[in-house]
Image (cartoon, rainbow, N blue to C red):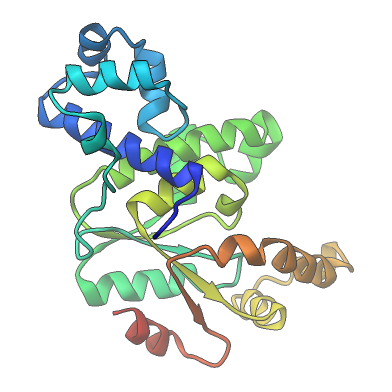
Length: 244
């Protein structure tokens, strides 16, 4: 028997509720009025951030003209339609591999952090400096919810730290095919330097050791991806070939 985590289950249920609501052409306000569940909680439920009681869950299912068991079934999109989400820290190759893969498959390529910057109207560094991580995570969730609801397939390059947020990572795993582009710390470092960025070593003499510690800390989280590709000895073309 296959068991899924609580986060994955909540994200899957949220996807099913949202799909049924949109199928009926309802807004969240209309579903709230029909079910007696607040619009605010429905928003949390649809993003996998609301742990609903059985009584309220039954009310939502009844309002949607379906059953709890139907909403609990895996809300899987067809494999060919699911977005492909690339995971990894800076230097993993998410941008270069993602752009090449999207071109090969005829899909749209999206840098999630760029979308977050557009929504916030600020550069990424300024978002953290002025508003903090909680705000970044909230905008990240809004951006992911919008992108993952798009019926057109796409390739996503996600922020390296998305795996640190259980809710956002669960949302991504429930609605996309996740791929960890794994590499050694040396590979990550050399790729960043090859891109012309000499700042890491110049500004922080301990940067490389911190990078190794970061990779070690996130390894188990990245390993939860649907697929892992070791890119250490592969070219971009070879990685794309593996994925395509």
